[in-house]
Amino acid sequence: MNHSMRNGAAPLLLTFLLGAAPATSTALLQSALDPNPSLTAYTAAAKLDVTLHAGLPIHKTFNGTMYYNRPTQRLVLNDASGELSKYKEMRMTLPSKDEVLHEYALTSTTDDGSATHFVLAPKAENSRVKSVTVSVDDGTRLIHDVHWAYTNGSSLVIAPTFQQQNGYSVPAHEDVAARFPGYSVDAALGLTNFNFSH
Image (tube, rainbow, N blue to C red; front, side, top):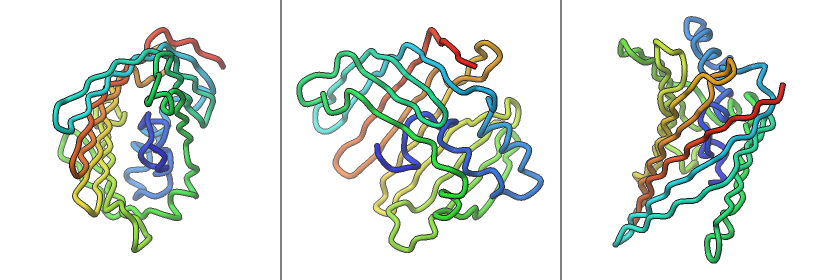
């Protein structure tokens, strides 16, 4: 998961939309995409459940620690061994707003009464990504889900669930659904026992 817009925690990876939306949406975007502007670091216990669907389903559960130091998240798994040892440590870095706006353009904004949907398209003609849709809950003003659509028909959806911890809105759970030619992956990442640094 090395693509700058595919990595782990959606709310930490999508601050790029600020400044890209119409003025009427700016406040909602700011609230949703950077809900914790004063949060600089935390650690949390992590549990990752992964199911690979390619023929017979294969299910694995990993335990570890999530380290966040703005703008980077680092997930370290304690029990990834053998062929999976290359996934023992995964880093997820937040791209700057300018970096992403250089590559993506906001093409539409709609509100269905419960969520506002922001659709972005890559500026590069040869991009594998067809579009990225960021949905923001109108009530909580937090990200509901992010959906990547690819030119080959593949898709990736990340849906975070937030909890209030120490005055912060943190992604305590994330569901991930990846659909690619010949295989698919469903994963759930849970974070507990947050330890915050100010």
